[in-house]
Amino acid sequence: MNWLKELLERLGLADKFEDIRAAVEANYKGYVPKERFDEVNDQKKEYKKMLDERTTQLEELKGKAQGNEELLNKIKELEGANTKTAADYEKKIADQSFSFALESALKDGKVKNTKAVKALLDLEGIKLDGDKLTGLDEQISKLKESDSYLFEVENAGGTGGAGNFGRNNGKTGVTKEQFGKMSYNERVSLYNENPELYKQLND
Image (cartoon, rainbow, N blue to C red; front, side, top):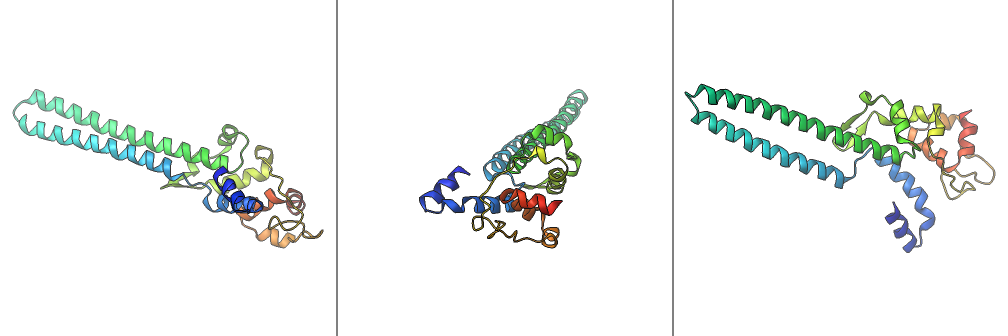
């Protein structure tokens, strides 16, 4: 998000960068960048168009080949190969889209080693729905509790004022009861802005 940081600096709002970045990550975690989504989608459309044209040509050829058993058998073979090629390509595109979305989401989640974290994930329980991953947040939340060393810790200024969870003149500002009711994204924000407080409340 260097572009955002530079923009805020030009506007004299550099001190708001961390708050805005945290809000963006909390609300758009798991989303595939539109440019990448469009690129893969365009590839898929282009290939489907090519396969449709090939299928049409085979249908036309089949009509002209009536009575020629050998040619009809050859056309059936080509149709079968065409169907398999289409299925293989669909799977390849889906796998690429999923892998890219997962890598992006893990990087946004401040994962130190994406390969190590992926090995701990139940990939069958994560699905790419359009341009958003479902089923990932819950698993990441559990990993942050059980294997926190796999994630980066950002030390934001916790002296009250910079973040929502600053110390606020020596007081925590968050009770254990409030902590227990926090959503995953709120806990991530607290962890990033005031790791000491997070550890106290999480004990």
